[in-house]
Image (cartoon, rainbow, N blue to C red; front, side, top):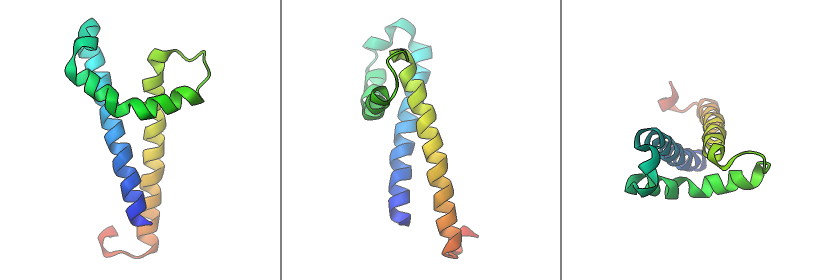
Length: 98
């Protein structure tokens, strides 16, 4: 179970960093972000998660807000997984948890 939680945490961490980088480049690159190679690369990293959130959110949520909603949702899930990992680690009395 600990291995599964570690795997989920790593996947969420990569997605969160991709969305954070995309947000930073959104601000820094401005209107030229569509021609920026790294912005497009970070869009590819976050695309599966933003597509899933786009399907879950109502249509009145603007497309430009979906990455922000995705980031916040993934951040909440990441915190929950981290606490579950800590609980599992403490419950098993692992030496590394102390």
